[in-house]
Length: 395
Image (tube, rainbow, N blue to C red; front, side, top):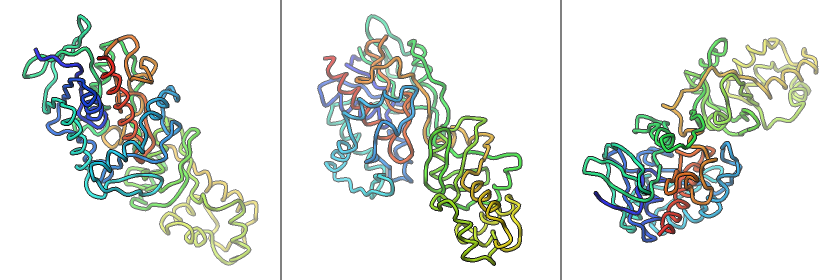
């Protein structure tokens, strides 16, 4: 039986960084993954360029049953800290919109960097390993692997959630957590396209049409692009809103968020002979303008023939168009998983289970879910760092 100071299950973003941090601080670490390749989710992120952090990271940009849980880890390992690591490895990067940082080259550079950091920490890496039993006895965790058992006083659950199963994602983290008495907040797809049914299937005919909008779900609002698809709604604004959407609720869309109150009445004064369809077509993609005009049952004649009251009602509808999704495209298309291992059973400083000494949970496996745009990677780095430091401090 091989003995270690810690066994990390999952060679994704959080697991690799946790293992590297603990190893570089003197801990003997075993990093295990059932995939034959480390960092598979990193490799497909950001269109293959890895949106590795966001400079606007703040706790209010994360969802959790406990909105305060992420504060400690995020404060102790910041985007600037990770950027310094990227710079130290000579990886060129650039900022896109809204504080999103991407590699100039390939996401493989980030995976290579993390593997190099693990090597620097003397981490033992075992990929393509089918896990057998995971047990806890006599103050130690025993993991059964094809090559024999491994034992350590610390075990880290870093196997993520079930989003994007085609790359090997599963709900293993939740099964393991429950086995050790930890509660799990019901997992659900997040940052995911929404589907439309019923009389809203008309909008599927707009597949491929995109427009800048403000999308609202619950108390959250996001001003970015929305994209109509053959199944419903997608695009950054919709993906963001989807994390806050619950089945049965509506999603509100402001199709013209830059327009102030009274803009249609002003348009009538400027171009009284223009039709509503033409006026909308000047502000929105033509196909979208046509469908909205049809749904509004707008008069075919000029704006001059519409009362100000009627135009104000049209404005109000366009500013809060209610879609009623009948579902989402599920974990297969979800970028992340909302919910997960309940934070109520974890230390926000160390990520250690309060009732199971030596058991840690980090990254997407935990009930902390970030916005689109690099926030979930920053949570992986921050939570992995917190656990890695805590493991090394155990001695």
